[in-house]
Structure formats: structure tokens, C-alpha cells
Length: 385
Image (cartoon, rainbow, N blue to C red):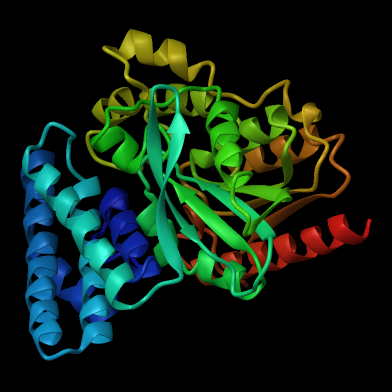
């Protein structure tokens, strides 16, 4: 993993995530250089400096995009907005949820991403997934074919968003294979959490059912060929949904979050790295817990132990051998429990291939391509079998 900040895993994780979701190294270097001497500052001071530097970069790109747009250079303007959205989001996700300026940064993330979709004529549309008394938002990228096509539902992790996943080019690679992708900010993530106050629940099959209900109403989706892909904490969300929602025909866990509750106990003992600063405040926000006692009660329920033998569909587990957040042993545990899957596979990425860090943040391209090829092959086998 590229590590410009010695001994700051959380910062380096964000830098790599920005690179892998659409940022460019020259601009990222500009954001990072003013921060190299911040080691002696407190976490709050240093993280707020991180926020200012990355937002400044994004602001400049928005200004340049405006100049392009005035000249009628829509695509160039849209590409600058795409990168601005990456940088705003990189700044925003690092802050405590009570840090007031993050709200404006998140609003700018959404605004720039919307401009990117509009100005570059992306084959995608915003959708709303009805859920309970409200809804949560999503982006549907349509396949590059006509007629009803398979669709993959994507669930975020603890601190990622639908826009970040869009930036990995995974939906684009699936589109080339004739597969649509529905990326959602389900409760506990993205817009659902930040703008609608929707917190996470362990019973993620409820989110999956809502997504499938929506997809079944669309004439351009083959409702008999809907699958699941999820990363990071989604490595719990997706497998859990697959175990209890029978309409899911295949599933991929990008990072095997087999027992997230146990991971929390380990983190309390300072074992393993954390994905964001102000970690305990963040997880209580995601799960709607008032205090640590309530959070730990919820966390103990976030486990796949004893339920994965319910899965009777093709299932791929991918994991990096140097994942510093989720133990590699969990990938083997998840795979071992898939006793009733007709096509189960465990792929551990090594230094030879790359993609060894958490959710392959050091090199998503090799893992992305592997996942997309596996999904295409699984669909072909389901159709012919």
C-alpha cells in the first residue's frame, strides 16, 4: 500500500481509497504535501488540517470545471467534477460526525458527482428504494445491452458510499459483460445515514428485499438473475442477506467480515487497525447506539456464525492476505461454513498479484476484474445449468 504518512494507517487508507476510486496521483500529492509535518499535532487538529487540504483541492477543481463548462467543454468539466467528488468525500469521511463543516463537504460531494453524471452522459440514473415509511437512495448503472439483463446489488461497508464504489469502475466492467449494477446507500451509510438519519440493522435481508422489490418492477432487469456484491462491513451485510433472501441467485463477499462483533472486542483491546479516526463515535452513529454498552450489544449480533449453511447459491469470498482490519482467518471461516453452496470459492490475494490490503485498497483493479469474471461465469452456469 502507498504510505506517504508513516505510522498513520487511517490516513494512508484514505489516500489509497482516493486513488482507487478515481483520484489522480499528482493532485493527491498536492493535498498530502502540506500535511507531512502534522505528526506532532493532536488527532483532532491533524484530521481537521487533512480536511482543509483536501477540500481546497476539490474547490479548485470545481472552479476549473466551471471554466470548462463556460467554454462548452462538458466532458472535461464532468471529469473534474468526478475527481472533486472523490476529494470532498476523502475529506468528509475522515471527520467526526459532529464536525459541522463535513456537512457542507458532503453536500459538495453529491453536487459534483451529480454534475459528473450529467456532463459525461453516464449510463446511470438515481433511484429511490422504498423502505419502511421512507426510502434510501441508489444509483443504477444500466448494462450495455438491450432487453432484461442480470443485475448486481452492491452494499457499502461501515464508511463507504455508492459514489466511491462507482469510482472503482466495477459497475462499468459489469456493464461491459451485460450486467447492470444497483449501488445503494442502505441504512447506516452515505445519504441514508447523513441526510435521512437511517441507521444500520443486523437484519440486512430487509434492505436486500427492498432492492429486489424495486428491480422486479423494471422491464430492463431480469428479476430471476439478481446477485449480491458487498465489501468491508458489507462482507457481513451481503452474506447475511444472501442467507435469508431466497431471490438472491449468487453472491460475492469482498472482504470476509465473518464476525464483526468479535472484531470490535479486539479493537477495544487495541488489536487491528481502524478505518476512520474517531472510530467509536462513528460506529455508534452508524448503528444508532447512545453509548458503548448499547453499541456492544448490537455488535455481538453482527456475526455470520451459524447461518451460512443456509446459502444454496454460488458464492465467492475474496480477501487480501495482509488485511489489517479483518483477520484472514475469517475468510476461511466463511468459506468453510458455505457447505450447501453449489459453487463456493475462496480467493486470497497475495503480494504476487496485489490487492493484499483491506478490500484490496492497494490495488482494486486485479480484484475487481476477478470478481467481474466470476460473476459473469456464475451467471452463464446458472443459465445453462
